[in-house]
Image (cartoon, rainbow, N blue to C red; front, side, top):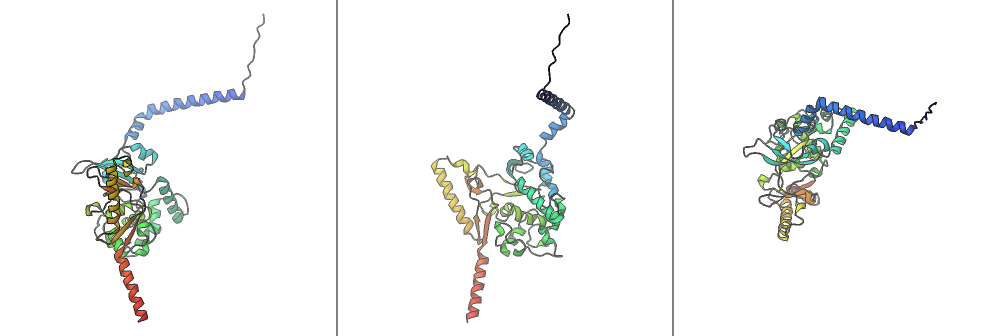
Length: 338
């Protein structure tokens, strides 16, 4: 008896499924082998403090950054984030963390990037295109050949003048010399701060100052109008690369929408008082907050005081400068007519 055999035809779709299953199996096996070989390295990398990684803080981009005043503490692991994965893998712009190494013990802080990741990529590409003619380059080199190096082009630069930075951002939309002197004098990222003369700033510090003014002037606002002098802003603590550190105030104002009406009335009154203080004060600087979202304010944990925690968009008017300008104009008109 002769047996009969039935030949089964293998269709292209079946072959494709077989190849796909083999590919998946190969991927799983390869992954298991890599984990077995490099598992310890992988786990330790994920557990490592991302703020101690110079790539995460973009230290290699300096002086196209906030500054380096806290880099030693970053490297020592004294600055940590509550959710490190958000910083390392998701590029979070704002993160809550802790700053250790203080006499009074660890303190809660807010970590902020110079700008959103997409904005920083655009900044780097723009610098490279303008200077090198290509989209990628050594940013720390290119920035010294850009408009941000204008203060170093003079052999002996003396002052940061209005014509250097006018219109770069809201705070310097129409700056006075008195305002710019105040910003330079209080620039805490300089090793020899305290003077409005530019000779006390290193070339890299001058570049970082202008980068902050153009991209994100919030740290400069916090330093120029500190809470120690009664200004309703968060306290600036320092920076490393493109991450700045400010004091943690408390819960955002947006979290008080369902608070008792007495609390909401109190916060509303405080908001009006803040606007009055910022526009009318003994320093004769009028500050107008252009970002008034509830997320831009926080309420103090202990005293319940309303504080502005975001100051990237603040218009600053020097009333003394305006008064002097008006007086000068009036004198010129009188001199012409009489």
